[in-house]
Amino acid sequence: MTFAAKDIPAKDRLIFALDVPSADEAKALVEELGDAVTFYKIGMELLMAGGYFELLDWLVAKGKKVFVDLKFFDVPATVGKAIAALSDKGATLATIHGNQSIMEAAAKAKSGDLKVLAVTALTSLDRGDLNDLGFQCEVEDLVLSRAKRALEAGVDGVVSSGMEAERLREFIDHKLLVITPGIRPVDNTEEDDQKRVMTPAAALQAGADYLVVGRPIRNAENRREKALQIQAEIAAAVAG
Image (cartoon, rainbow, N blue to C red; front, side, top):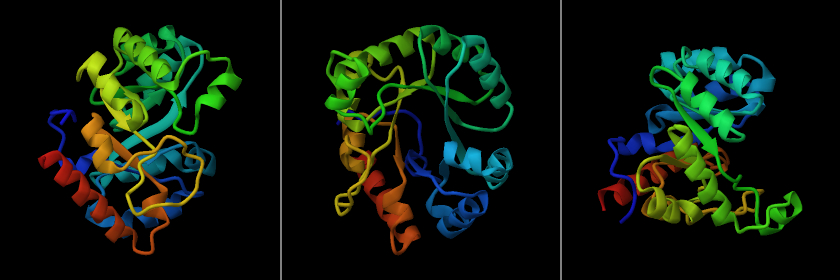
């Protein structure tokens, strides 16, 4: 078993992606899920819908942890100022994108409990997409290179497919958090834009610390029941 032995409560390892068109819909989902989910991701769709930071405040006031997934990307000074401002908002995780200077600026600017994550390679990308983007390497090698640079820059973790998590742990041990999107329960067979996916148990066994789940819960007939089912799978995997 290679999953991280960090002091992370099993229930907090599930991050539900609130990828919905409005803050009101997001709040309704949170109320529906109740204590089945303790950690939520809010991204660009909600940012453009309005009420983003009011939603962040609302989630924090309810005792929820929040992953701000905005993939900050700009000149280093601007990213640093954005991360510094976010540090006072009560978020637990935030994503950044970009080169070494951007990662270093974000790592230096963060404060309090906020942890900064570097995006490695989006789980919607495959080998053909990397060819189109001009990357002459395998996805796994790109992820590993980005993770090594993130470690050197002083950020707290990376966002990576579970398919690369095992090799990440082999080369960087547990020095970085690994947050894994593209999680699909065994009984989920829907087609979507995530190409590099993995089940909750397999991702944890490979070395993921946190699992981001969206559509399998959001599209379930009984969302709370689906969330509890995934939580049970996570708890069993962590317990060994």
